[in-house]
Length: 311
Image (tube, rainbow, N blue to C red):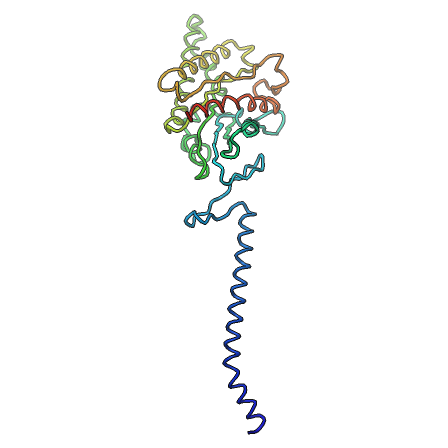
């Protein structure tokens, strides 16, 4: 047998084994590559804030990252509080362009004093719509971005909204006072009656907003009183209108069906010389220090309301 024929003979005998070994080698490389790829994918998902739970039937379980504290809320139960209202809820503090929503201090204080932090986490969200009246809130209940009813159910699927704090009515006051002046400038004797009627209109609008919240029987609401302001120091009609509206709102909170689900809270920061440093120069808004105090002051009240709801 010639040399070239011998080599051909050996190649023919060995080639099948080469093919088998090559195939096995390729399979091993494929398995190793797949393992490395899966490990890298898991790391990427975790670092991006989401991970797959092997018991979740293929549904991604997204971790909730709180933008304020940077806390990652993975397996803890989240108790959501929604702060809803106008510019005072937004945290507007003119002339500063900075917004300081009281929800931030509320959330921080609740979690700093949470004795059950291993089991649940407080999340305080806010929607503040500067300039809005109670009539506008009612007209926009189902607005996809601003509506109260929409906001109640727009959080993550594993987050329950348990409490809503409503702070509204401030922007209704000048409109109601103007309306009263147009209808009663010749009827000074009936001015008090007009004030009472205006207060009733405002209170009824606020109650309708609370009704939206309480239609879900798992939720509670806090009716935060209409705040004082610089105008109320000089405008008697505005001051009496606010007083009557707050009194009527408090009375409603004590009657059925609201006495178990709605809590009236007087506005905790007075407008006077002692608290002048907590208010913005416009006499209408708090400053950032004032909003922080508001959130801290509301925290124990919120905790008490939530604890009451669990019993």
